[in-house]
Image 1 (cartoon, protein in one colour):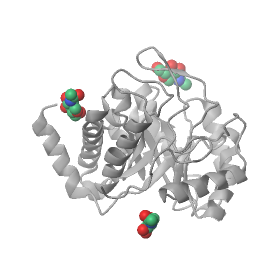
Image 2 (cartoon, protein in one colour):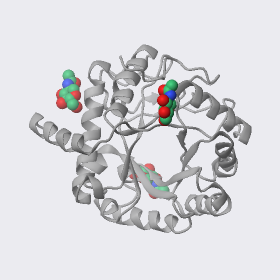
Image 3 (spheres, rainbow, N blue to C red):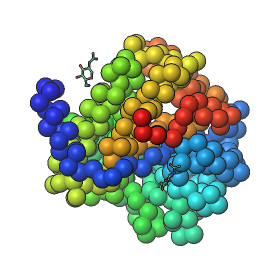
Image 4 (cartoon, helix red, strand yellow):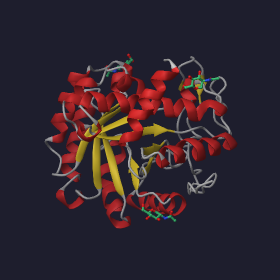
Length: 308
Ligand SMILES: *[C@@H]1O[C@H](CO)[C@@H](O)[C@H](O)[C@H]1NC(C)=O
Ligand SMILES: *[C@@H]1O[C@H](CO)[C@@H](O)[C@H](O)[C@H]1NC(C)=O
Ligand SMILES: *[C@@H]1O[C@H](CO)[C@@H](O)[C@H](O)[C@H]1NC(C)=O
């Protein structure tokens, strides 16, 4: 895209943003050894996230996996934290299991802790659903949630920017999460912040335009962003490095919050149990080293977003 277009989308966004974005973290359902987290484990995670990053918001990807809804909502209530849970619409089995877990555990008692529910994670990106099909699934889940709990979906920034998700925006959902990883675009750290801002500006500007203006748009979050630390896999010129992850955090994540956009960092805590996955370049990629904190819940660098 030409630079003039970038300036145009950036200008659109700047008119829309408020004083400061809200920071949240993706949080896994398993302990370092791969067993399921208990309510106490989530409480300990929340203490670490609050202390180290002054954040009171986390997101998960399921409601039924490891009984997450059952265990995390009482922990969130005990610690004054809010949670976004997920539903996997990909198969009937996962869709029904997550819906049942929400019906059983996402009760009125926890309506204040359950900030929202995302139906699907990058389903449009993988091509598993059209926008219309996913909108139907979102509406089906919305009907079973306590009043006030927001419902929407999370997808890659480019699927919002290119119009694949337009039916969802026009369908009047409450929440849209746009994921953006300069790392997975094989960006060297020196240009990572520019790439990330471009991605988010493009997605947000398109969503706001399709909605008929910023004030009519759903609530928007950057649903995932982050950078792997030393020990993780590099992706072309994007190097796994704790120093680079710190630069990414202070320039990109803190910068996006300052710009007024809500951000979920992927992820709160390392997940050493995770098997390697095959990356878009066909190479095996480590997914164990994306945490702002290590598996011991100690921060890898300063997470306070102090002005520099
Ligand atoms: C922590 O966040 C709250 C509200 O989100 C804010 O009022 C407070 O100043 C923050 N504290 C620090 C130490 O940044
Ligand atoms: C979703 O799409 C991916 C990529 O095309 C495919 O591998 C996967 O099997 C699909 N999942 C379902 C449940 O259809
Ligand atoms: C840096 O990022 C911008 C925005 O994505 C892109 O237009 C530009 O080509 C990138 N430059 C380099 C050297 O990668």
